[in-house]
Figure 1 (cartoon, rainbow, N blue to C red):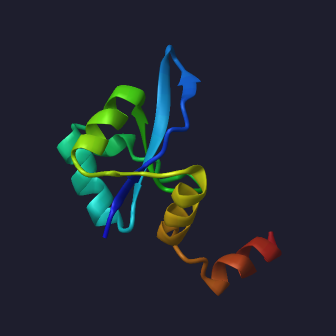
Figure 2: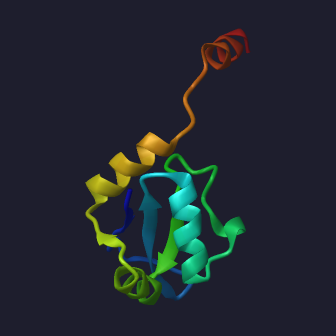
Length: 96
C-alpha cells in the first residue's frame, strides 16, 4: 500500500494546492491524520476521493514517505477508491 501526492499547484484562496491519495481509504485517512489534516477536509463527494494539501504540506508528506506522483497516477489511484455503482442505482436514474 502507498500514499501519493501530486504537484498540481492549483492556486486557490492565496495558496497553492495539491492532491493526496492512497491505495486504500484507511491508509489515506491514517496518513492525513499524521499530517494534521481534519477528516472533514476529505473530498468524499469528489469524483476522485482525496485530500487537498498545500504545497508546504506536500513537502511534509513527501518527508513522511508519500510518493511523488503525476496527475495520471492520482487519477488511477483515486478511481479505484470510488464506490462501485450498483445496478439499482442506474435503474433509479433511468426512472427519473
